[in-house]
Amino acid sequence: MVARDRLPFDPIERAAELWEQRIGPSGTMAAVTSVMRVQQILLSAVDAALRPHGLTFARYEALVLLSFARRRSLPMRVMGERLQLHPTSVTNIVDRLQADGLVRRVPHPTDRRATLVEITEDGLNRLADATKAVTDDDFGLRGLDADESAQLTRLLGQVRRAVGDFD
Image (cartoon, rainbow, N blue to C red):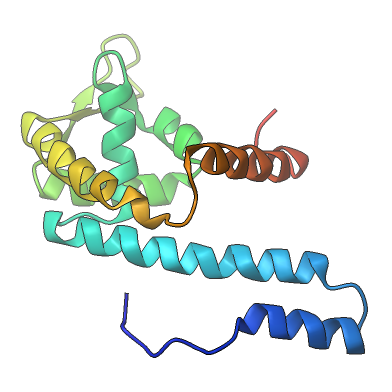
């Protein structure tokens, strides 16, 4: 993250006060703005941890997904569903991982129309190193204990479920 001077006040709290005075109840605006700011903070921390390993978060997630699969391979369609990405995005991610020798495309054993993406030994090794980097920094999430992190995950899951992200 870029170093900068700390503000002597919380700008989101100040915006909420002004919102309250000029527009109305500010709870939702403050919560959403806080989530957006924390997303920026976390992305910056994760990107910084993954950059030395030549990975973006999207490519890291794909490697994790493949490593979790029983055969360490999945059809690209399934990868897209699990990563909640458009097929074009999955193709771009796999292209980059393949160019780096971290995955390979292999024919599906029973469906000639499908291609499997399989993590390579180099991919597993890179994933292990990258995982150590992001977990050593707790993915950039600071200021919460384990119970609070679990509560945050549950609360955000409620929002995701309410908008149809999953059943």
